[in-house]
Each structure stands twice: as structure tokens, then as C-alpha cells.
Figure 1: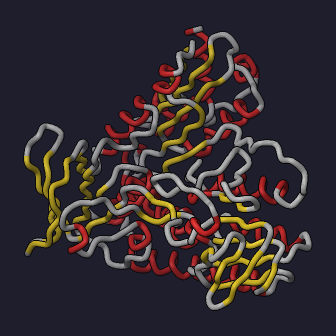
Figure 2: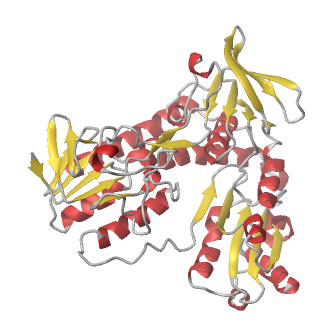
Figure 3: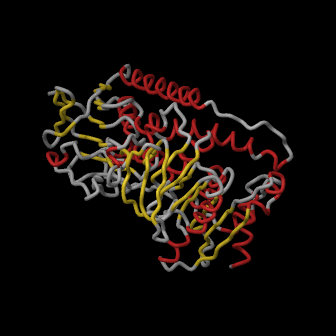
Amino acid sequence: MRTFDAIVLGSGGGLKIAQGAARQGWRVALAEPGACGGTCLNRGCIPSKMLIWPAELADRMREASRVNIAAAPPRIEFAQLVGRVSDTVDDMSRALRARCENTERLDYYPHRARFVGRHVLRAGDEDITAPRIFIATGSRPFLPAIPGLADVPFLTSADALRQTSLPERLLVIGGGYIATELGNAYRSAGSQTTFLVRSRLLRHEDREIADLFARAFRRRHTVCENFAFAVVRQTDDGIEVAGRDEQGHSRRATGDALLVAAGVIPNTEDLGLDKADVRVTDEGHILVDHCLRTTADGVYALGDAVGNHLFRHTVNREADYLLRTAFSGAKPAPLDYGPVPHAVFADPEIAGVGLTEEEARERGADYVVGRAAYADSNQGLARQFEHGLCKILVDRATRRLLGAHLVGDEASDMIHLLILLMKTGGTLDELLDMIFIHPALPEIVRDAARDAQANC
């Protein structure tokens, strides 16, 4: 049995720990059964955004007539685009693995490591041990229990990012960020899209923002919310999904392909966690404290396996925190995430940070709301925006930001101004005291702040 200073399971967020610890002089084992780089690189953030950006560009070209540009309808060369995306991420993954294999004090195991004892794991046919073990095994697509689903050739998000043939009709089960992002990219490439959503589109967003998004999204997609699924089956005309719509009427939707994007579940069920005394929730997430320590001494967990936040930017913060604290020997302070932002790269784009208005109301907060429509801004005049909103929630007493939400162009960029304000504890007065470049898009944030000031 080989002994290391640390063992890392998973090469997504775990890669930062493995490489960082090795550079600091620790002897590290990294176990990864799949492509190096984890979900984000191989089947998530990177390939999806490489697919989404050309789709967004094509949509802008189609809408150019509203600013008096006559252009031929664009055509996305879908097979070539997907091929380029796949080749790029595959090359990046191979380069990452080669870098790991050539890093001193880092041993790479291309296996699914499983606990066979409290601090002993089996990787391939070898047993390894270490006083520090980090579980960063990520997640995979959740498959809902719909009768007949297993009997049809459906796509998951990972499949959709490698699919080189463009279906004429695409059915999408799901209404979260993965479903809306990928479904919209396929529509931009030429598919007719139908979304079948068990509850509502982007149900975790601020309700006002989600409603504005849904209104714009329905212009390009067929959306059935509060859909009660009955059965999925293969017919002569394609894949059929049957159920009842929100009015209780029977509804059937047929497509040439079916994308199932109904959420994710953690990859923790076959790690032998019981042999290590590592406890999990009923959903399979690993239980950790505020320092990312599991119920077993010396065993830590992070990322989707824990489920505190399901973002690459938060697992990066968790990995940096563990790299600082788990090797120091000192008692660590709890991990401070700060304000955690998110974005949905669909059309229109969404970004948010902090509390939604529903959450603020549930907490009994005394707050004011500031709103500014994209169309009312100077850039709105220039770009002829048809939709878009910046919404901020301000604590009445402290005048600090409780939450901020945007729907519209460049939302994921503009939100950073408000993330910084929340992180530094800045106030509405400080936001209004700064000079905004005229007529740049962030003036919409200023206008929302002015509206909040008027409501104080």
C-alpha cells in the first residue's frame, strides 16, 4: 500500500487542490476515472458556452433589422461547430492530464477510487492511503422517473454537447439553466423547441425576473409549464411525451430528439463512504461542516458532491480555501463564500446575487426595490431593446444591498458591479456617488439605484 500526504478524488475542482499541494511539496495522488478537467471542461461550462456564443451571434444577426441592418439569414454549420467544440475541449483535457502526469510529487490514477477502509482507498488494483482525503467527484444528470423514458434514445446535457446532427424538432424536459441554455442554442441553430417543465421556468430566480424571462423566451419556444408527465414512448413520428398541461388538459408533444435536463445528482453512491464513516444526506450529498470537513477525521468534500452551491466559481473558492487550511495544521475559520452570484446564459441572459424579493419578504426584511428597464436607457435607445430589467433590493435602515437581479443583454457582466458593492458592504449612497460612463450599459444599474433612492 502506497502512502501519500493527500489523496484527491476528482479532477474538476479537485485539480486545484492536487496541483497546488504538489507545488507546495506535498505528495499527492489524484484519482480520475473520466476525462481530466471534470464536468466544467468536458461536459459543462466550457463546451456549452462555446456552443452558446455562436448561437447568440446568429440571433443578433437575425434581429439586426430593428437597427436598420439588412442581412441575409445566418446559418450555423452545426456539425462543424460541435466538432470544433469537442476537439477543443478534448485537447485541453489531454493537456491537463499530461501536465498532471509530468508534475513532480503528483501521481495520476485513471480510476474510480473507492474507500475500502477509514483512510484507505483502492484505485485500480492498488491500495493507497493518506491523512488528508478530498472528495470532489462532482455530479451527473438526474433522470426523472417517467414511465417509458428508459426505452427511448434520449439525450443528456453531455450528449447534447457532442451531438453533431441537428434535430428538426427538439423536446426538452426541464426548465432550469441547463435546459434553457442548451435548448436555446439548439433553437438558434435551427431546431423547433418544445419545453416540458414540471413546475416553471427558472423557478429559483426572483419571480419578477423569471416572469420577464419567460415572456421573452416564449416568443421563440413552445413552453408547457406545470406539466404532469404520464409516459414517454417511441412512435412512427418520433419520440412522444404525453401528460397534462397546467389546465389539466391532455397534451402530447412529439420530437425527433429528446433532451432530458431536469437537474443533477451527486456522484457519491459508489465511493464506499460507509467504510470511511462519511455520512451523506438522503439525496446523496456529503455532509460537511462550515470548514468542509466530513463526519470522518481528515476527510473533506467540496463542489457538487456537497451541493452547497452548484457552480464552478464556488468550487474554485472551496478548493482555494482547503488548500490554505487543510495543510496548515491550524484551526481554520469557517469558509466565507461572500455574496454568491450566478448567471443563466440563455436568451435573454439572467444574472443575480443575494436575496430574491421572495426570500427578502419571507425573512421579514424592511427593504425597498429599485427598478430600471433596459428600454428606458440611452443604450436601450441605441440598441432598440425590447426587454430587460435591473432590479435591486436595498435594506431601508442600512441602505446596503440585499440582492440584485438582471435580465437582458450582458447581465452576467453588469452584475459584477453589484457583487463588489455587496462584498465590500457598500451602500446605495456610494453607488449613486460614483460616475458612470455615459452612455454605457451600466447606467441601467445607476437608474435602478436612483429608483430605489426615490422609494426610500
